[in-house]
Image (cartoon, rainbow, N blue to C red):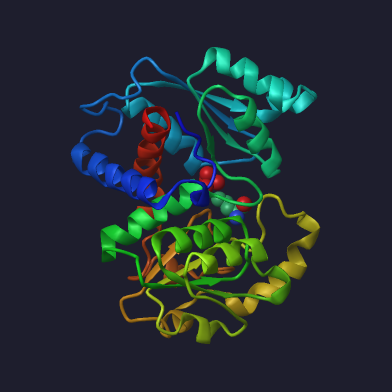
Amino acid sequence: MSNFLDIYKADAAELRGILDQAHAMKSARGGRPKGTPDDEEPLAGRMVALIFEKPSTRTRVSFDMGVRQMGGHSMVLSGTEMQLGHGESIADTARVLSRYVDMIMIRTFDESVLLELAEYADVPVINGLTDRTHPCQIMADIMTFEEHRGSIAGKKVAWMGDGNNVCASFLHAAGQFGFDMTFAGPQSLDPEPEFVGYARKKGSNITIERDAKKAVAGADLVVTDTWVSMHDPTSARERRHNLLRPYQVNAELMAHAKEDALFMHCLPAHREEEVTSEVMDGPHSVVFDEAENRLHAQKAIMRWCLES
Ligand code: CP
Ligand code: NVA
């Protein structure tokens, strides 16, 4: 069994295997009704706990559906309604849950919660987003790029705005899948040097840029995310909006990228803030394919966790 904690923690061949499996499982389903099981049911008789300490639409529904399609059962748990939210230690929670369930997915705030859960659980643990990273999202994003444009190796990704948790996992993926990335945003919201350093060490060209138009020039993929993440204090909203406004992805900015550039956003989007509706609903956008591919990528991640 393996944990899926971050993109940099698996090796590149394992990540490739997960994405190959995801593409295969997606095409094997064809257009069949979403509530029907797959032909193969690798999670038959298995129970998966899905713990949320933050809100979620996509992660919650896609993991739950994925477990069911693979023949397993799932229980969605809210952190605040568990003893976890009332003082029980993470380590004890991990030991207890391991007696009941076969796998745990957690969305939490501090990364230390995820790491402690993984250390003390006897079953695989999956990162469903922390304040620092969001690896399942980026696996779905790479899958989406491959569906539309083939291999992402050697391509240029332009990240616009906040150097947040989603940006961090993109930097990990740059290192693992061999693409280049330009971050454009205000200096105070740069990605952590650790994430940039990782990708550079793996051989990717990572550029930090302040000019939005320069950043997207020649980009194969333009990506952005919300200006205020779930872990950011609401008091920071106005300051962040003022800093990030020059990095809005709009039609004028997209015109500076390659003609066939894709646009991605992990969603939820705040239309007319980090991205205009014109781009979200326009010809470059693959945001709803990304959302769908959360399902397929995570099914492959869960299989890998149990089978590797
Ligand atoms: N992209 C994503 O993780 O969405 P949710 O917050 O709805 O799960
Ligand atoms: N950066 C966002 C991603 C939401 C899926 C957040 O952490 O709120």
